[in-house]
Amino acid sequence: MINIPRGTQDILPGETKKWQFIESRLEELMKLYNYQEIRTPIFESTDLFARGVGDSTDVVQKEMYNFKDKGDRDLTLRPEGTAAVVRSYIEKKMQGQANQPVKLYYVGPMFRYERKQKGRYRQFTQFGVEAIGSEDPSIDAEVLAMVVHIYESFGLKNLKLVINSIGDIDSRQEYNQALVEHFEPVIDDFCQDCQSRLHTNPMRILDCKVDRDKEAVKTAPRITDYLNEESQAYYNQVKAHLDDLNIRYEEDPNLVRGLDYYTHTAFELMIDDPDYDGAITTLCGGGRYNGLLQLLDGPDQTGIGFALSIERLLMALEQEGIELVEEDPLDLFVVTMGDDADRYAVRLLNDLRKQGISVDKDYLNRKIKAQMKQADRLNARYTVVIGDQELEQQRIAIKDMQSGESEDIALDQIAEFFTK
Image (cartoon, rainbow, N blue to C red; front, top):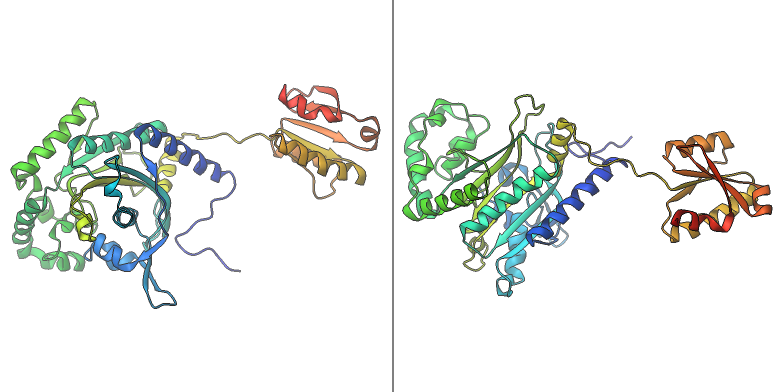
């Protein structure tokens, strides 16, 4: 027997309705904020992610699915959405559009070779937003407000928005030097990843899952102490907007995010519930990226965005006991007796479906009792039984499966019955 690949999942009927509901709700919310959908390829040039995500990140070093095509080109299944959206923005010259900033959203599968655990898959579905072309604190606040709005719209309440500023490039250079000086005397006590990042991306040491509880991490310099005047002013304006919007937040100076392209605002939305049954409490995260476009040979433009995992959203909803959708009832189930009735039912089902009525029948030549049980399992609102007598008289009894009451109608009036 061939089994499903490790770290992936089949989303079965019933569960797919939850996914459809979530995606539909997200689409409705994007209309409120005037964001439009973009769809990019599932695989891209490996160089896009090596340059855009960062050579020193776990994503690039350990987690990407790379392969060569028949033209000997290095390709990668996309591990995240931002780099691909920015690539499209540059390639399609979206900076020339009249409406700026360009406000985009995407939803689709991403791929990372990670250790399987609850809420984390090797193929996962990510929804993300990118606003490109404006360096205005109010657009940062809009994106943060959107994040909170999304999760609250599904009924989640135990939420915590955590924010930080990681400054501009100048601030980060000074801060990185301070981190190197701080960690260098004790770096031998840290994991191999942290040791390799000391001189390439020391901020990532603060985000290490292995060494995050070490005393040197707790006493490390704070980025907020190294923000230059411009970066501090930008951060203060973002917080002022959040205060105006009555959005509660916490500041965490160690929040640096996992990808190299972030500058200024960084944030995560987390489950704030001590009884939450899950190792991963971060629901989504994102931030501003002011150098990414130029890093990918694009214009001197800035952007901000975030991404969320629909799998983690579903897990949080399940933990909170929030039901998204009820099973859609079938309008009508047609029970047949005999070959002539079955042949007639095939035409009847086709006609009713064209008129917007959901209808089904038996396909296993079962007896009437078994067919009625199937109607119950399908949660059919009504049933009709068609046999030789019904065909001869051209009349049937349509039965309400909840009340048990029946109504005698002409066979050709079924569609009209549902219209009423």
